[in-house]
Amino acid sequence: MVDWLYFGASLLSALVASGVGIIFIESYIETTRRMRLLWGVAFLSYAVGHFINSWLVLFEIPIDSGIGLTAMWVYVNFGGTGTLGFLLFATITLLKKQHYLRWVVSLSFMAVYSASTALFAFVLPGDTPLAFFNPTIHNNINNMSWLVSILVVPVALFIGVVFLNHYRITGLSWAEWIGLSFIIYTILMFIWPVIELKSLFYILRTVSVFLLGIGGVQLSRE
Amino acid sequence: MSTITFECPICKITRTVDLDTSRGRGIICASVSGDDKCPHNFIIFTDTDLNIRRIQRVDHIVRTSDDGRFLARGMSLRGARKVFGDTLVDIISCILLKKPVLLCDDPDVSITLYNTLARIFQEPPELGRDVLIIDDCDVDGQDVLVVNCRYSVVLKGNVPIDAHKTLGRFIDEAVAINDNEAAVVFVRQRISALQRAAEFLVDRLELPLYAREVLAIVEKSTGIRLKYADLHAVRLILRGLGQDRILRNLIMGDLDEF
Image (cartoon, rainbow over all chains, first blue to last red; front, top):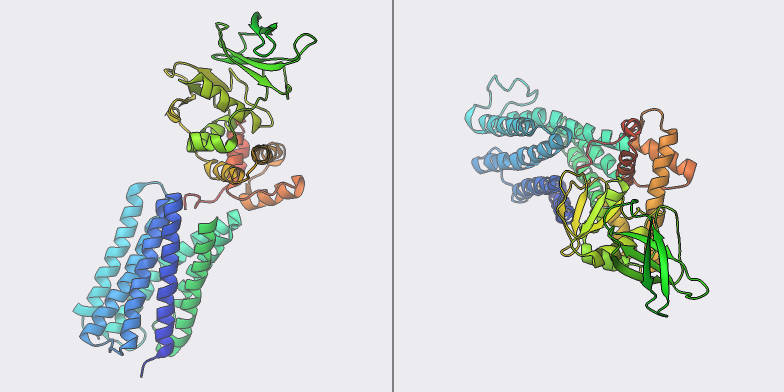
């Protein structure tokens, strides 16, 4: 039976992320600020990941099957590497003007993320001792999921803190909403791989994407 | 001091005006008030060789001062925005920064533009010093913004873009008003508010403060409500005033390019 909560939350996240992405791209067209283009692309990438996940849920494709695992890997890479890689690149650019730094950090993150998730999903066996970070059942999908959490947490936390700090200095509410959404997303990463808390995760994740949408709309209207 | 003689274009009576040609470079101006024989008021624009470049009749001399600042009608603000586009914002930014603006290649357009600019500042830029109008656009070795008025393009000079967002917004909101006088007053009030905020900070910002605290203090003390983006324009004015200490004390966010 289709998990309608899971499907609805994923689809809603994808739709909201699409909207946020379009808002940022429209804002880029108006202001020609390249950071907004990067954010737009990042959220469209996030939306693609969630559309893939919605498809998996709707058609009840087992995620431990070949096609299911591949689709999950594509999903976490679009939603993780794609989204956070772009956002990391854009955020570092605003803090440090050294061009090499943003390339080195962002590409390193993306390379490590893609390669390591592929390794745990397709190459290493499910009971590999390298998945020491996984406190739950050891199989390919869980190992990959916990690894994603570990990699996403510092990046999402960094982006969230940068935006909340901007709010602290400037009082701009869009920075508060965007910062909060990333802090909530960071916290969510700790419960994502826990199967018993999946429902809570889906609801809160949708809330975090909505907060981001509010921030994006405010920013584009500024 | 030189004396210029010209004929009133309306009643044909000969008029004279004393002009201090050492006061500025390029085209300068002087006011000529009506008298018993000829009741007409003029602003006369001449170059430093005392060639008359324009005699502009005004209803009354709105403002006169010893340093040659007068307010005459130029093109409408909407017209100036249409003709000069973002270059108009570049020019206003440079005036706020106290960086000289050189208008060249078409004195007629230049004078008209100067008249428009003069009206949107509470303290109009001085012709011959803050705004220079000359025929030749070739200027070497000077930190000036050179604007070719024949083609409405910036030929030379770094344009500070800090205040562009705020100034562009002011102008665009103003030109949406279907009344040039109201539009001019709208922009003048907002630029005055920025200048007042800058003056206030020069007096009061002794310690480093975050931008949002500064905005709150400015509003509480002066009643002027600014947006965060407006502080970039205030910073531009502070730069023009050479207030480096105040600039350091006004702490801005890192994501301003976002």
